[in-house]
Length: 354
Image (tube, rainbow, N blue to C red; front, side):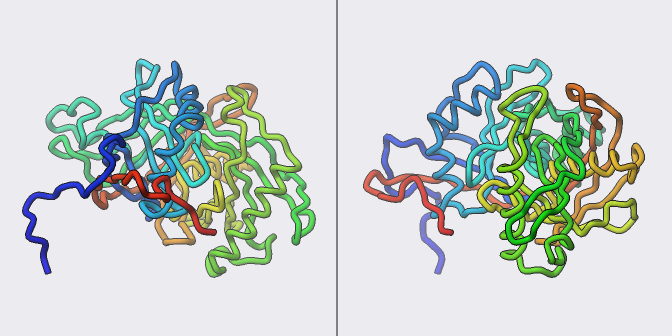
């Protein structure tokens, strides 16, 4: 039965609470909820200061959009803010079930399309086949390159990362239930621990997601307890975001290598993880498995979606030898929504089930 209302209207709601308007997208199955309107101004002279301000003063916005009943424990979001960098077209704060990330590759791929389609960047000249979108992420400036036709996005998007580097290689960690094992820690805008599924007694391609989540979470907790993360530029970036379990196939091959990323509060990335691909490319380059401009494909064990990545040039991050990594993937729009709050709703700010 179709509703007789010809024009959509908002349901009864608290007139004193701003309506949160969003556009939803996904990249390789990983959701992105982009806030169009309704978020109060995020104060701060720098993007990292804005990130701190939002965490301290506006966290109810994150909870309302990420948590049930409007979201779910694996929802991901983006709040667009002004950037202090003159070359940036936009700044972005990333939202997840635990807080605020420093980088998100799948979101950058989606935001490249969004920025072009919603007029956040100047319309490209007629005949242009690719538009550049400079996105200021908490980790730094990231350049997205959006295939376009007639001024609108089409096809895949690629981005060039901040300098990606290896923080620790062959780090011995005592993991409860698994004993001592070697892990690597690399940075692709966020820090990840990398471990092959075989060391955990699992097959990343066939194991139950719950088993992979439990194992990855145990590794993350062990690394956090036994190893201090440092970043040469800012303490705001010095945290372990999660663990990526791989199939162990790091040596170059034309066949995709499979992984799954478990980050924040046991949140599962449905995509191959853009910042994780960035960090894994840096790790493979450091080990001598990859040369510059040699492309590898990375497959998500959750959905089978694929990103590609390659190290495009060498760089430095503090004293660390680093690489700039290009990651490519496809984002799609899934809808738009307006979220309201009733003043007598005891669950107005959301909840999560574990």
